[in-house]
Amino acid sequence: MTLLDVIRLIEAAASRHPAVRTVCRRDVFAINAYPDVRYGVFAWLQGEHSADLRYGQYRFAFTLFYVDRLTADRSNLEEVQSTGVEMLRSILLSLDEAGVSVEGSPAFTTFRERFVDECGGVFCRVTLAAPQDGTCPENLYGLTNDIDDIDFI
Image 1 (cartoon, rainbow, N blue to C red):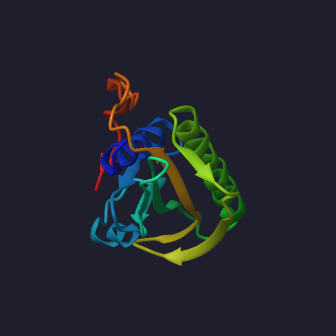
Image 2 (spheres, rainbow, N blue to C red; image 1 turned 135 degrees about the vertical axis):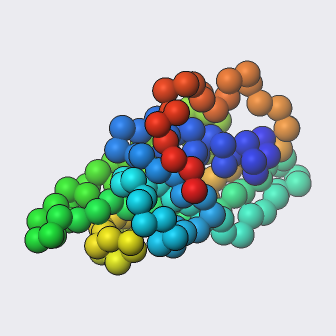
């Protein structure tokens, strides 16, 4: 599996989650360039990747984010963060089912941040192990026409 395969798996899993309306590629702060961004936003950043040539595995490092708008009184902060933890957890489980294993136990960090809007969310740093065999089963990404309503930025 290649880096691109893993990225496509991550985005496909995020796109299938009912809380996600926008996938932000490569930089969570790109949200700021889109004043009409549709929340909830899933975003990812790459970290340092490595290859274990002896055992035929890649190790891909990512930071995964979930961001959603807060109400004026911020009373939905914990709800947004809880949704984010569950959404990120479901992505990681989906990756595991596709043959990409999550190394260790990911820690989820909650936050409140100003993007285009006052937002809350959660992120986790993960290392994903994938085989170097370069083959992928047909329809690996699970992409269907039902993700047409997702924005990619």
